[in-house]
Amino acid sequence: MAKDTPPRWDRRMQQRLARGEAAALGELYDRFASLVHSLAHRVLDDDGAADQITREVFGHVWENPEAYDPKQGSMRSWVAGLTHRKAVDRLRRTEAAALEDGADGTSEELEQKVRRASAAARADYIVTSMPAPLRAALELAYFQRRDYRQTAADLGVTEDEARRRLRLGLQLLSTANPRHQDGLSSPPGYGQHR
Image (tube, rainbow, N blue to C red; front, side, top):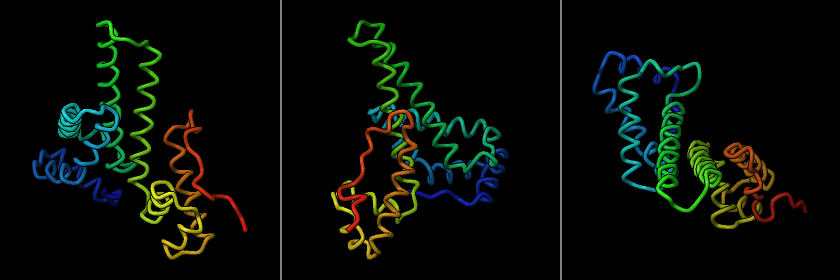
């Protein structure tokens, strides 16, 4: 995934979009389409719906370039936030319609589903936005079930540095779902000092 772009690039892109430069929209799409689609898919779990959200997001950006405020953050973050809002709104509408049509479930279950999907999408965004050293440490610890010593050896860093990277990565990841942080547990062997 692309990292945040320099603020100057974001401002220039906004200016180009405001002038109606189709090439700017193409460049923005090339840079962020996979991010938009993956976030929408993470919330909606539907390729067709994620495709539609992707079109909606870039349509909104094209029609409303002034809505982006560089003082509030990067264009990447703004596009991700826009994607998140549109995907959650779509999920709420779809699930509410299913409830009205007599599907099993309650409005409380709908909101729980929306919160879970929303937190998962935010976690994905946070992980893909992390600096590579933090992301690598988390991937080793969680997906390959390495403890901090093994993570340090695999990354070629000290054990203290591996613990620092894991701690910081977990702190960033914990912001994905501030109300329900109980789903996050420490990697194996984390916090053990010998």
